Structures are given as C-alpha cells and as structure tokens.
Amino acid sequence: MAEELHGSHPALPVVRGDGNRLPLATASADLITYAQSWHWTDRDLATAEALRVLRPGGALALWWNVSDHSVPWIDEQDARLRRFFGAGDSAHGSPVRSRDLPPGLDFTHRRLPWTRRVPLDTHLANLGSHSAFLVLGAEPTRRFLAEERARLAELFPDGTVEESYAVELSVAVSPGAPLPPTP
View 1 (cartoon, rainbow, N blue to C red):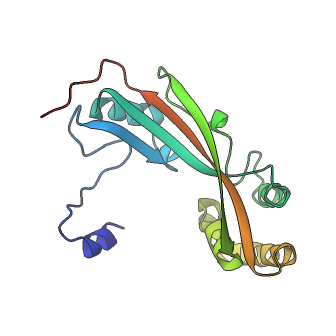
View 2: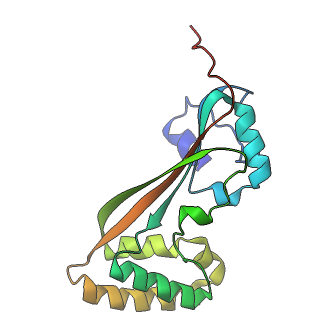
C-alpha cells in the first residue's frame, strides 16, 4: 500500500506506524481514527498511544462497516458463514456492543445505515477477502464461494447484489480542555 501511495503521490511522505505506535508527536492531533482496525490493536497500548497523540479535547473515533442482519439474505449468509467457520458470533460484522472499547473513556455511539449495488463478483471478492478465508486455504474458500454464487444468482438474477450495511461509530473526547487554535 505504501508503494502504491508513493507511486501515485511521490511528494507525500510515507511514514511507517501502526495502531499501537503512532508516528505522530505528542498532543499533535485533533482526531485519531481507527476504521475497521481497532480489533487488530492491543487495546491498552493503542488507547495510551491515541491519548498521547490527541490534543486535550481531541476525539478518538472507532468504526466498523457491518452487514445489516435485518435483511433476510444477509442474515442467512451470515448463518452459513458461522456454520462454515464454526463461529459463535457474526462472521462478518458484529454489533458495536461486543467491541473491546477502551475503558475509562465516555463513548458516544451511532449506527449509520447505507447500501450499495455491486456486481455479484464484487460481493464475492469482498467476502473472500476477509481474514477467515485468507487463512483457510484456496480450495475450501473456492468451494464456499461457488456455493454462495449459486445461491445469490437465484436471488439476484441480474447479477447485481444490493448490499446493506451500517457504520457502527464510537467516538470519545480525550480528557482536558481543548487547546486554543495555533495561529
């Protein structure tokens, strides 16, 4: 990804970091976001690091795009995924209440629904990009996705799948009064 960014925008510096070690100065940011990634961090390290980098009154925003299980075909697909992987919780998108949010911060939560229409191949490619499939191996993944293709082709005969999602957003303001703007 860094190579792609540098190739497209050579004037932009590329700095390596991760959610547990942000390559930013102390009290230098008004907003730190973790989109689809908080669950990959060490919660305690990442919380301390975000609070170090945030200015007083800055915001920590964590969000996930999750499948909308009120849509029958999505709920049924999720049930098939859970059976396939032997997972107890949702296999692709779990409720914000189950997220391991940092303690000691007062989070405000919002759920923002959205939809998109994509070709069936795009839907299946996205599904197959989830980490559970990536570690599973090519043949079991191919078989599962072929079965899903057959099921979804019946539901969406024109080859366009309407996916329904929700962004589950949690935002907390860092302790302390905001710093005055710098001139």
